[in-house]
Image (tube, rainbow, N blue to C red; front, side, top):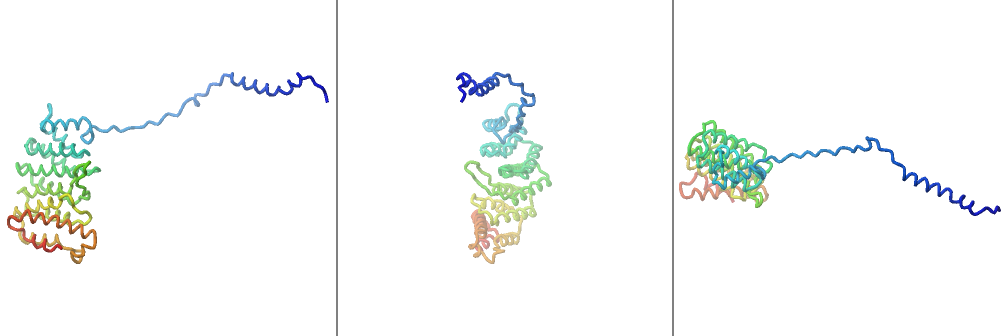
Length: 325
């Protein structure tokens, strides 16, 4: 075996390591090539479009603040505003999710203007048209339609106190009221957070004001009876917010108007309490639908009997109640 010098052996053994270390150090001290502009440019962030919430009476903002000022001012115009401008603002509050805004400001304010006769004939006509349109509009919160119907009842009252509608306009109101009532499928009444909806009761109030108006006749009253019967006899929802009593108010005023004869009333009550398609009312106790329908009829006829018990009885009413189990 050759006896090589130690220094030669050391150089031979460590040369590869030294070379590797030198390469690493050289790499660390090298100036990196500038990246191309394509690599430096980052992809643009997508723009997130936000739709600003419109400043209307449906949401907190300056319009709701203005409406609140109307109330605190006794529902008198603020500054240079007119009653017509105030009515337009209050009308826009009828669909507000807040019960305070739509009920104690929108409804109460418009009622005050109408009962104080603060609006001109043309302004009441414009309000009437707005309300009829709102009763047909989309209503995702379920509050615009019933409160529009309730305010429209005040417009009908205003026409009774100081006539301003034509016969055609009164028929438009009657058609709107009947169509609204019979089309109701949202039977919600009161919610402790969301307040009142009460579409059935508000629709009944509109028909009540129509029946109080002497401009409507026998034909109109028969149409009202038909619409009310359709909602008394529903079997898919049991009324629990006094809807039966409210539905009977127009019936009581039609009776007072004396536009219908005894046969009209007898036939109406007989049809109202017929158990068909059930074979008899005892069958109602075997189904939820039958019990619901029976409940709703009783919840209407009993208050009507009490309301009219002090005077001449309505033909057919007592027999109708007796026909129920």
